[in-house]
Length: 217
Image (cartoon, rainbow, N blue to C red; front, side, top):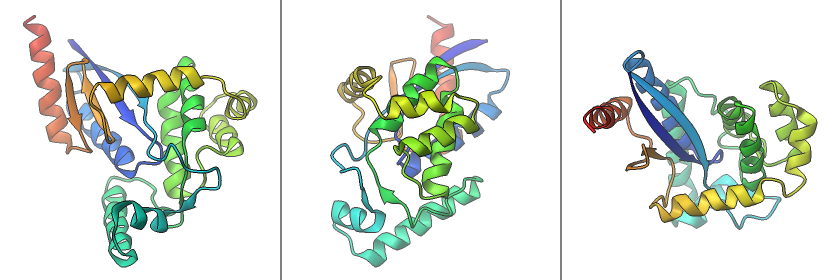
């Protein structure tokens, strides 16, 4: 069985990243027993300059994209509908605030050393979009770490420190230089970048192509 590495460049504050991961899960269900995928989450910050208190999401998005509140609210409802069709909890999406996610990425980097990064990623998606919680709040990170079997005290301590800052900054810069300017971005075997939350069948075809190339190398 061919192996394919996927670097999934993502931010826990990105709705399309949650959707993109669910579509990847669907693709992997199709490819079960055919391709062995190694998944590595990589950090990206949608709002690197956001102050700690954040900003109401609609206000932030209207300013960012130059759209009126009604249009942006409709766009958000459409995203919520897509997410809910995939079984994702986006009930708090309209109430969330735009937050900086650097602390979340640092705790996620630690979770990766415990082989629990994916469960924590999913728990933070749920916290942000489902519960409208700040994913970089040390207490939220403690709570979600405990939920997935991690040490909550360690998670909170990392969030309140600068631990893993160098690792996260280096990874962010690496993938920006690799051409990732928006998320999600799926990088297959370090060679191909698939931008956006593509449908599952697109991911299936791409993974099969890379696996076939690997088999013929």
